[in-house]
Length: 420
Image (cartoon, rainbow, N blue to C red):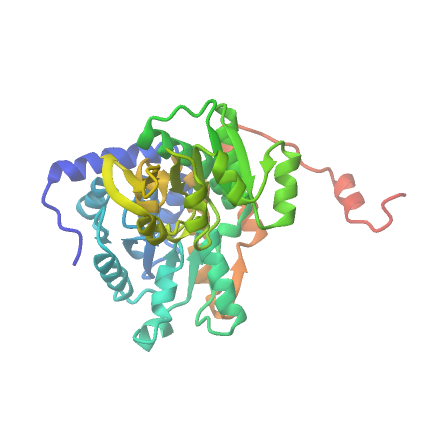
């Protein structure tokens, strides 16, 4: 059922949080102002499965300003900010299906509620909506109504590209995650800062002098490793990709197999999007007091059943911190049930970063409405011109000017006789 408003004060607090985030999202604000005038999404039903945060609320308000009928459900049970959900319902009349800490059954009931809205555009953060829409028990008519979807994460894009390659994807997808104004900034700077924020809030740990093993040196791993080193952490990188590993070495990080890294690490964090990155043999090799956490998309990166099987006692020692006592007496500490540490223990990415990510979402929705009849059932990158326009808007908002090529320079760069 729709989010139940019982506390006006909760909604009021959510509105204050949303308005504060909005003050750091000038690009989305400019898009919202244009949308209010042009109404490019008039009558379009949009179901979004995203983290229910203040930043997401400003995206939803922008979609509504453009004329869309929009609903929102959570893409993670622990990322929902209940006051934000309350405010969207109370002050913006946008249905929200999300409660912080909801169990798995409720979570998927809320995903179903978003699907029952019969969307014409889906917005995903991990492809839960698309996956459910492709399930055997889904009403076929729901899929036939859909123009296209958008995807916010690396994990989701990988999954959707696999579906497209196998010929089972039933509607087009715009890979918002792959826009340069998204993953270069959101994944690197947003994840880097917010993940450290989550670890520190959950543990009050001093990063300086702490040895941290980082699983994965993609854009999220790069950002986190850089920020952790900046605070004085001794960072070890583990990788399966030789190019990523080589880049980490060239950036001055130590690189080694996970089994060796965990033996040294005070903190082990996964940022890969894959399954069982940390498992039994790694837990067995960790030192007493090691902290384990995840900032990849799903909690499957850490094999929690393996950890439970190795333990003789489990107890909560601090909010967000679960202590596992192993059979040999060592204690390991799991943060936030293995879910996204930056959203479960902190507030996710800063609003100024999400400004560009959600600008991509809003403009991708407009692009879909204008072009869906020409799109095939495959995964598309955000058009380069759209990506560049967001970068220009962000520079303008920051008060930064840049040079332009002269006509002579453009001619030179486009000529095959460049030496003349």
